Length: 193
Image (cartoon, rainbow, N blue to C red):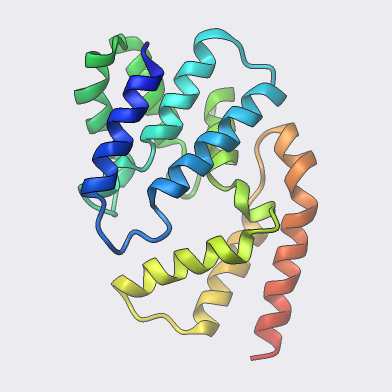
């Protein structure tokens, strides 16, 4: 598995083919998820091919946005199936990668350790100091597609953060406390509208 060449290929393609309104689902988000997945892989004790599979899934997980936003995970899998054999990925490894990608679909339903790690990496920012900055990119992207009020946005975010749970012990330990603070801040903003 040539992870570096597979990554460079898809990032170059995404730079040219992602719709301009993908402010959140961008190359920066992909690189952020890859970095979070790599860190979680180490914290969770991954080794060998599991790390390669996880990194590849992280890099390809939102590539489907080049095709469409709705059901982009399935599109990401189509892209992975078409491209990854060129970078020495077996059919079996591609199916594992697609399982990891599909686990990121909201609501997340991971079943394997790799799927749990990618889910946590994909939403790592919920429990970070840069939550507000990143969530502003998401609302900007949503507003490019439909009208949404500040009140609606806050209600969506409060509901999302309230029901979200990190899947791995590492993310729970590292991100849960800050996620709760971010949720409380949103609740205060809603009260002050």
